[in-house]
Image (cartoon, rainbow, N blue to C red):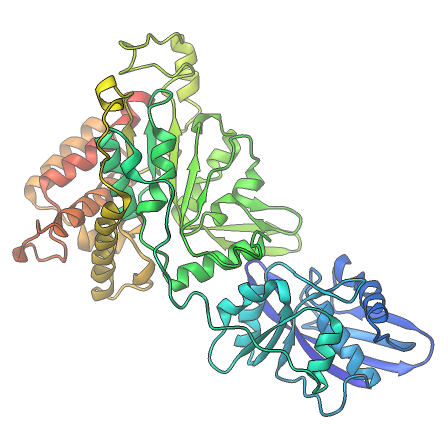
Length: 531
């Protein structure tokens, strides 16, 4: 008898529908799977037959062949096992004729005890099943929180604990209850333990961090040990705007694909902060492996990637960041295929000015013990093209006793976040009114050429300033554009405080001379330290 069920498989962070065709006849027991299954799929025979027998619903001896369509696309992982089991049950009559499987999709792994085990990538596969027109999605009970994010009107998502519960539901016995409403339908501002009010002094660095958050700019912090670079970086997520539902959905898909969601945290509600150790490999940073998995830059999507002790990172890993910073995505090519992961994040780098940490402005307080050769070798680890992609470069000086002994708390993250969110809203409105695609996810830090020409036009005085700066700093065209982007963000921050006028002609106000000069000051260290 021919039976057909439906499942989904994972490719990158996205799922795709899989049709499971099973034909079974009475006879000698045999089992075969065709349709480009990987090793994990081929091994499903033992788990399916043993799990069915141990839970009291054994499969009879039969000659069974299972085809996974589309047959020209490789199937990986164990998420197809529940669908294969249902197809076998339908073929041998354990599932009755009145059980209509055409609108159902089954995602899950079978254990030897008959339990349905969780699998990674459930959200992407659930979304693919819904897009294929399935209205009843069956997933492992442990994955129900993650899958419920995809729930829409007319679609029921069930968490299946074991085989007997599934059979009882499909055969009209005791029915399961679908999951609750979408948990991301009401996004709230998360609470952070780290707050900018805890940071003493460092007013210029705080201003730079606020600018980076408001425009989505990459930032480099240079300062002696103990000056607060890591402290500032860890508090950046607390001033970023809350995630939109679309951003939360995309971040959740990436973490689901990587198998990083848990029962207590089945979806991503706040912006991610990733801080990998400097010893990580290139594949760990950008993604890779035999079966390409997302790396740190994709796990930080819509959030912050913090690289502490930046010069200590491997040269090849550091340089591999260059293309994703420009393209905001990373493509991993293997013999089995090509996978593209999104990677839109704010890069925050922190470093000492030399191996001992006291070169430059801090030598008067604590003499630098490094030789010029050691200093040059240390700073030379960061290439010019890499620096070119960092919009803001700021010094974080050591605190004096007066600043350290200050008891009055500084400005809170909530206050800064209000300004950052208002500036982001202003820029999105500007992109929206100009008719740009993806205006809701755009920010000043990723403006392309057309938007730069339209929103960063300079008057005669500003043009003279930039001409002088361009010649003195010998900057590249990319650095020039990045200064304009930062100046645009500074103008937006001033505009939300009432600094823009109607005659500016641009929503948020035109870029002025003082915006350019402040943007240049935030990028002067590449020449001071890196020559």
